[in-house]
Image 1 (cartoon, rainbow, N blue to C red):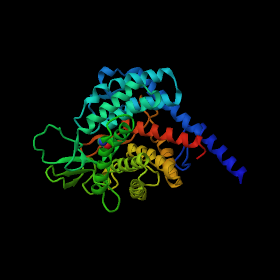
Image 2: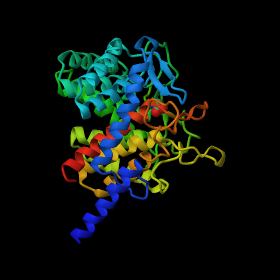
Image 3: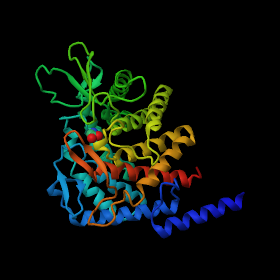
Image 4: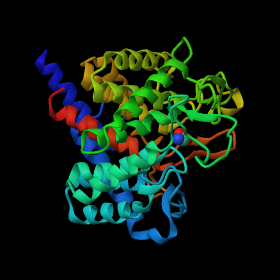
Length: 398
Ligand code: GLY
């Protein structure tokens, strides 16, 4: 039996190293293969760091001709490029990558006082959060704590949520709009409360998560993207979508934000209610996932819009590895491995042309026909995070 296992693993390793890509059928990635994928990512990001200038904005999408779309600081995706650099530095421990990660992270410092929308968690925790985790630089910690206080100013006690969109100065808003993505901003608040920040940040995070759990999901475990709350009564007055195909459909990335968010809530609080909920909504996602493990941008997309979303696959993979580590349930490990094997095939890796990124084939905003079937920095970020998690799991011997 042991001999068969050994032969199988040798055949598998040989296949992965010679072809430099695993097929989804193999449904697993060896540590050696993960290291090769990090080497590929490092080559791609070296081209990026050589060609980009922070004064042109933060990198969001890499294009086939070697150019980038760079965006202004308050764009919700600005933390992901520095975050990718931190994940590369974590692997290679090389001074060049430390300096690049620090340089790109520093651009975001003005966001510590920003409260124009809810995405401060994504922006600061993916950049400064990873930076602090890896360097323990006290200046980074101070910035995360200040940013957390800024995010908390968006808390609306009447509805018991952090308002996602709209200026807090708006007089008599018709509603408080909250999107499922907001679950991803809570980790920074929980971290801040544990690390010398205002203790009330923890209450805000828990309250927002509980309100979301109560209101944002359908009985089958899928979620509405956007809820509107009545500012006077705090009641839900509308359940809609912004980026999904229709109000009642399962927008893939929204479902994965939910899975990741509630898994994180369990990891950080130990409250089993969050675990049971994360498992329920993970089930709703896995039940409908196609055989290759990468979802369409919306599970109910019509026949003329059957486009995959690699970003949702990457976010789900990272969340499933977290869920596996928390529960020991191999079902989640297997699902993450399967999706990551597919994303690590030549069908998704940004090989050829002049791309300076890792993953192709994501969808940003289909209803507006923006970022359809392209590279997005958050797909790269959660893919590198998932590979980092999988490598640790492999090293611990599963
Ligand atoms: N948070 C915006 C998105 O997922 O596209």
